[in-house]
Amino acid sequence: MAVTTQQLIQWKQQGRPIVVLTAWDYAISQLLDAAGVDILLVGDSLAMVTLGYPTTLPVTLEEMLHHTKAVRRGVKRALVVCDLPFLSYQESPQQAIHSAGRVLKETGAQAVKLEGGYPKMAQTVAQLTAVGIPVMGHVGLTPQSVHQLGYRQQGKTADEGERILQEAIALYEAGAFAIVLEHIPDDLSMRITGKIPIPTIGIGAGPHCDGQVLVTSDVLGLSDRMPPFAKPYVNLRQVITQAVEEFSREVRERQFPEDVN
Image (cartoon, rainbow, N blue to C red):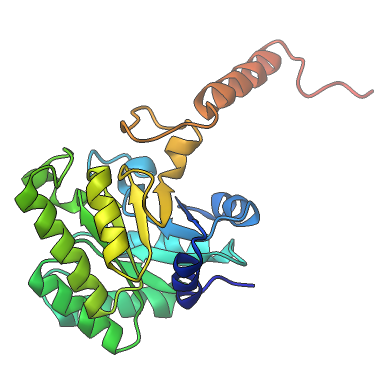
């Protein structure tokens, strides 16, 4: 049975943790979906992971649409969520509706994710949900604000923590079905998780969230730089390198392909 936004809220009520990973193509999404991942996030992290940019800022809406189509074709069960990239939704609610509408209409994804919970963004989320577009929020460290915030942990002071808490509440009240909490202190994520009735999905936010998300290339050991909160479960950089070196050696030594005559 396919995962729905309503089911995610039920899982929070039941205390059933939610598993989220990023995806960027058909092959990866097929594997992750078959392995039982609940939500596949086509994150704008693909700017760095797949396209080689130093930040998430350069990726375009067209590129996000392209990759989300590929991911959606590989999925049978998971909920597919697409990040709205930088400057595809911040200008106005109308721009956000147009961009998010294209995502749902052209890719088959079931929801979009956008960053920030300040008053104007909460109003944008309210307008998106009012026209039937499911929205996942994102507070704490927001990578699209890298030139303003950097990649440091957010919410370490009482004032910062209260601001992030109020942003999360505003996003819930605006109709978001879940909220990503990125790189904030454990006690703050616990407060937010206990305060709002929609799921919190943590990344570098401790064990008290309703679910956890990581960038799949980090989980698989494909990244050349790992964030402090990531955990590689295999070293595919090494596995792939060894496989390619072995193939190269066999070709150069004329051992591949084998002579069957």
